[in-house]
Image (cartoon, rainbow, N blue to C red; front, side, top):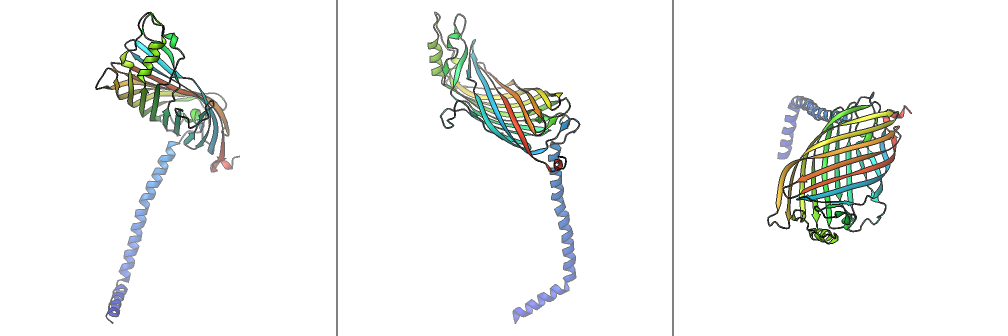
Length: 371
């Protein structure tokens, strides 16, 4: 009976305050609408910001008509590494091999994989490894790259001093060096409404009128260099026949160096539309790079390190035919990294030349009624 009375009292309180509760409910509902509108406004703002990344002037640039693309690409990589110390220098470079592979793109993203034609054993030790991911829009771009060289370097040019014929070592194989590069680079295109960088290098738009733009960017790269200096010394000093004693400078005799590279870059790019659906692009960027490193030479107990500012460079060139459905073309990308210490200098230049053919598919909604 006690519990029944309590329930009746509670029910009476509810009935007495029904109108008050209803008013409170309406007030809470209004507050809920106001609260819900805040994230909606935020979502709308985010959506607008994302759209601004691809905003362009259609008198100059034809937007991408399709959602997806597939592409076949052949790539020829080239790389050289120059070590120098106290007037001596050694240039090492691997043979240039052709790689092929498929690529797939969706809007800003482009991902692919290539393999060497003359080496189809993917699991062989020492095989080169490369991974590239590019995110393109009309306003900004991001490049992610991961490279691990194989052990197929050769001595290309050896200079050890006067009266020493270093040409005797040209073409001699040297498997005692491995170079690794991991990095990210982001850049901003100022004249993105009229100039389309992706039109030349990702085929996601079509440049209709010749135009150029200034660019600025920032990046970080981590480089590793492993060198078997005992093997290098043996190859160099034992492979040259000379009346003069041949001795490799100790500044080039180290086993491992780590480089960290923080850079700010600026440059200019120009798209030349020389015929309908045809485009030629040339761009160059200089990077002011702050480099830190640690290593150890054979005659130093505590090793060496340096923190210096150097100039690096990035060059891109490309030509493409694109009628929005099919595209075909080529591109060349060159990068240089320079390192200087009181003991030695290391210059690394690497790049690639790509030839490709691709097909776009799945029309976007706004273009379906126009075909």
